[in-house]
Image (cartoon, rainbow, N blue to C red; front, side, top):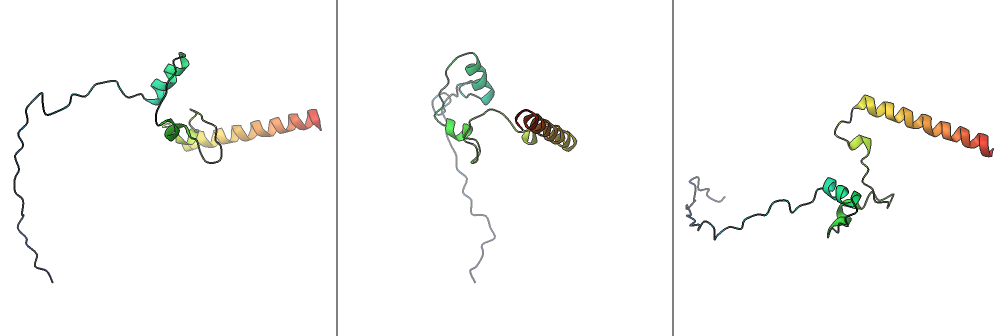
Length: 105
């Protein structure tokens, strides 16, 4: 077996920085959040993102691009509220189906 050296073999390194020369100053407010993009597009300002397909692609089933967030993924998602929402949605679908049957047979 190999011999283990239990003593740390670290050599300290010093770094000399020239303040104002050796670092880049970051510029604030260059990034756009999804909310900023939505606000800009609502005001009629065109926004072009180089990596937009990464964010607006949607799932594999539907190719529709949307800003909607499913209730399950919202921050305030509560199991009781989700169940109630599911029941309301079921009732709406059943009601629409009954109306459709009544109108068109």
